[in-house]
Image (cartoon, rainbow, N blue to C red; front, side, top):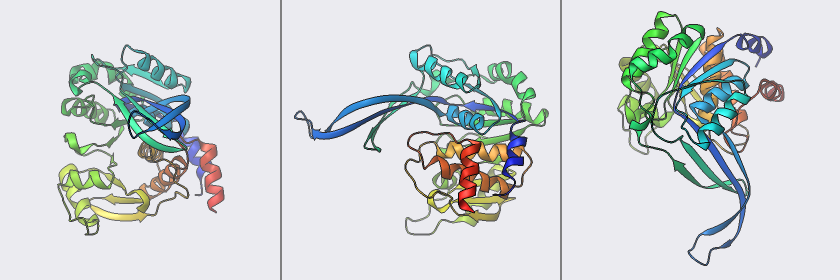
Length: 325
């Protein structure tokens, strides 16, 4: 990838506001060499615990790791997990805006044995516990929207983002001339239209389009892009296809398909967050959709080569690009 140093200089001047479902990612690292006498399950001897930002907080973490300034708005519970998550973000110089709610901080605990994920344990409250009104969103986020270059909705269907909140924040961002992106979770069917960027994965794109192809039929890329344009009218559509790379579309037409940049895949946790952060930064910095996708593809390729939810730095991307040439 040419022009990375110049792109990183532009990114360093950006401020990004991320709004969505923040989480604390907890990892239990250990080994399993015996089966429990109590049940036919492995006994895991825990060697260490690690914690990092997850969900919308991981998008913010990646934005900051790539060199931009970032603020994240989400629910931080009055508990140890909320305090730990806020501390992790503040250590990265990420500003936080706490949204109202009554639940616990969302925590995902992954048990890893010999670098393989054995299981995941989730702690969270009902979606209603994290809900805020459109008026609360405007009060909390209005000033930040005006002082940031882009607004990113990171939806994990946990309750922070509702139709009313998305509509109000979008209206404020449009009025201020800001770039607006959304990573959707179609199982909750948010209403949105005319955003600058949406980034579903392959399964999510089919759900958003209301299409159900047979298991053995090829992915209907043209039909999906046309349908998503008809329904949501996004300026740019990037569909992440896993090992098949990224599909780019504007105006309902396929622009290009970029093959994956990943060489070794250890863990896909958070790779979508990395790609979203990189896409938003590159587009907000003024690159073309195709240049932004190559940048995001490389960033995701670095991320999946790490164990655990991981952020990517400019130095890692520069080294990755040099190795690819």
